[in-house]
Image (cartoon, rainbow, N blue to C red):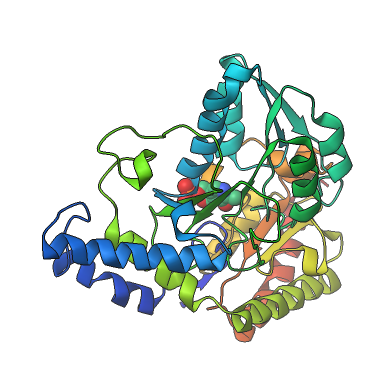
Length: 383
Ligand SMILES: Cc1ncc(COP(=O)(O)O)c(C=O)c1O
């Protein structure tokens, strides 16, 4: 049975051309970028060329890109080290939202334990943050606003421009977690007033274990890892050169054609499900304020875990929420934040696409999913 992979918000297949670009940096050009010999300098050059590619993709300067081990690390870095570096001026207030990735929320929880105040903003029924709410929450003690760009569970894309403008006016740092939106939704730091952006590679057909933090020049932030002074002294540790090369290659091959294809497949799948399955409801917005690859549907009266099991038996990989944080059986905090009951949240599945999915795969899912839901509703204890 051929596998149909619809869990691309969790991670993506590494593109063949990314693998090809990375391989020589494991076994031929394996120098340490800090070594002075030719071998080391070859690695350093490749790393700096990669940094330029990633910087260009968001309109940044190359020396505003700092490599990390991924999105989790970059988000931890921002929340903690913006906090610690600025608390001296009596600034101890962080604003974020109720729909952030766990790595932001848990970092904020830690900051609360350390004496910071954190405001967790509500969102509306489609997951949008109201910029007015950001404005109203800012006080003279606020130092940072952190709002996820494209939500990993329901695909909602936030209005960074409006939120950024408010933060700039109020003199507050603005950060976004763009792990899900990077290369899918344009971000240009020359146009959007934003100070920090979290990026990673494994959502865009790059390797796992590599990401980056954009830090606007002049931002006061402490070092994350102390050591030999790598990454301008802010993130020490021998650089992951193959990962960095793969990340840059993944950014380079991302293109509008693939976005358009995913959008079309997304809408075909959403419309097909809503048409053919009664009591099915889309979680999150429709249209271009939704990530091009995200589908999240509530099937009334059916347990999502059971749907996932039946799909799995047909070799279709889906998700009941955020795979990066689904170590608990608690209902998704994102679905609760948009107003679903715990029961509705546990009846919702996420299907997330990549450029590798096909129309034939979508047709196949539209053929078997109604049968699965019908069968499960017959035996459901919920109804
Ligand atoms: C929105 C978002 N932020 C952060 C992360 C964590 O990134 P990483 O897996 O690179 O640590 C993920 C998922 O992995 C994500 O979806």
